[in-house]
Length: 351
Ligand code: IPM
Ligand code: MN
Image 1 (cartoon, rainbow, N blue to C red):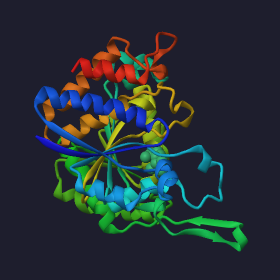
Image 2: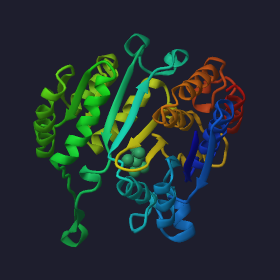
Image 3: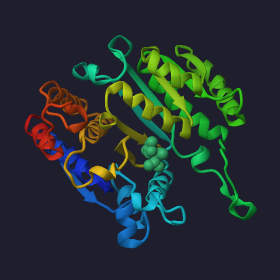
């Protein structure tokens, strides 16, 4: 297969983790006879510094023309501590999600047998966890009307959802559930929020089209608790943008590290694959970040191209690296910590 992949490394540790995903993907391409053309493009703080814009039109054109986008991370502390900054790296990410129509963000949570004891949660609670969040990614409070009133002393962000937005996300959730354990949980706050009531009503309306799927409706606060108590009770969870952002960080604790969690974003155009972690600026340039979330995001990419064997080969080699202790600082626990680049080399040579 011939693949054209847009490569958006972004900020902080982004370039370092992306490099490892490229090494591993190239090793896969070599072994299975594929051809991958990587087209790098600017995004985030790196793009602001270069052209004054976090998601330049040129970058969008590269993404639109590609078969998929592999994305690193976005964000730089120089913007975080400056509330007056008018252009922020994160705007690039949001603009990209919107312009590429990436309304569904698939965030799986699973455990690695060799890492179960790295989680602060008890083994018997988390063993065998295999759930997927489907986070709505282009609506809600992230994209609602916002502003200041009262001479800047009052601020507001509004959360808006349309039935169409909820329905297309919910359908993806039902379809995903059909291919898994046929359990779907709609996470909302319908006891308080009108948008949540629209979510519930819309999902309820779809139930009869998917009679094999058992649907539950749970409040986000209760899910936040149950997720770490009984993660095994969940299969597919669908939720709105902000709830999904928060719950998926929480869910990463089950796996043992944020550095392990991949994601895929899909919608109307090119799909995008990215780790769920941020740009980890404290580690930038030090070659210490965990590249596995990005490497596993590349596995999700191969999977979506129906290259199942290739995706499995990546997951297997990642598993092997964990079993053999070829791990970065976040998982080393006093033992030898491998460099980001060493892990990439090890994975690529063991493909
Ligand atoms: C994520 C990130 C982003 C988000 C930030 C960087 C804007 O936290 O992908 O989860 O909130 O969506
Ligand atoms: Mn997040």
